[in-house]
Image 1 (cartoon, rainbow, N blue to C red):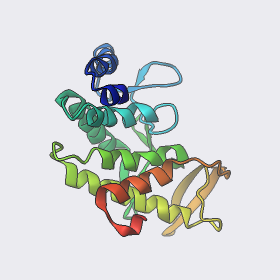
Image 2 (image 1 turned 180 degrees about the horizontal axis):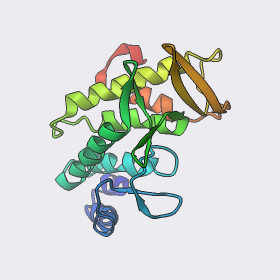
Image 3 (image 1 turned 135 degrees about the vertical axis):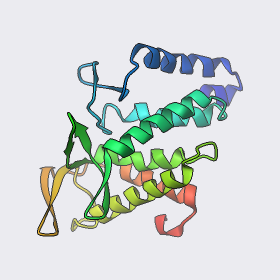
Image 4 (image 1 turned 90 degrees about the vertical axis):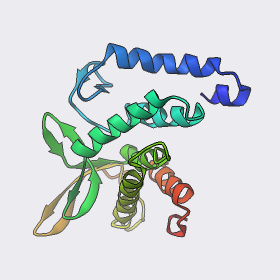
Length: 202
């Protein structure tokens, strides 16, 4: 897609969308997620490392192709609707993206998944009939990432942790306390700055 934009040659759009057509034809289904570890279809929803680029570049492909493929936008909206239904929820009025596995919600947060608020914001284009709702969801998630960061003395979020609410308190258990310069949270904050113009994100 980037080559198509830089060279003004539409053949690169065709080459890149061919891959999507292959995936969507070969792997039709209810959820539409490829298990990145086993290369099998599953009803597992994980928006994290290994699968993140798949979601991220569907909507970016739509933008880079000059917003000409309604099919690509349709797929983005389909996946987002499914993710909002199964993997984005409110716990004690806090909007959080979590994992969904075998009809069960898994309450943990991985730093690699925090890019998705920016992806949702990128898809809030005028051709998307749900753009206002989507942008609101992106803002809620980004605000939550910021608040989570500020739970730590360093102001930087841990790489992976799970959470629960006990007697109304937000309880964190660490899987990995490290911070290894991952850019995903900052990417989402920057995306919200660009797409909303709100100075709070600066």
